[in-house]
Image (tube, rainbow, N blue to C red):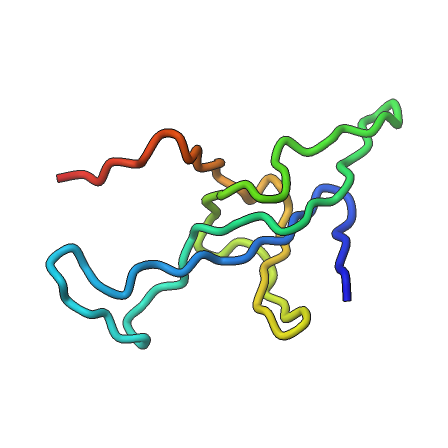
Length: 104
């Protein structure tokens, strides 16, 4: 089945976090938080402005994004757990060219 989101909605696949801390401690499944990072799988066509013109989304399929902890609606499509959320729930796009630095 192919799912096509409507308006300014996007479909996101969560990217799982590491199972170990920097010190090598293994984190059990019960202590893990849901990841707030994901990859966009599909996007809607966009919203219409007051004049009726279509305003395209600023993200595209394949972008790695950060989103809020409680953002989106969890769904299961073809056996895969996905999130459907509005573009406004996305906090930002992660650029692969610039690695994120962790605070020391």
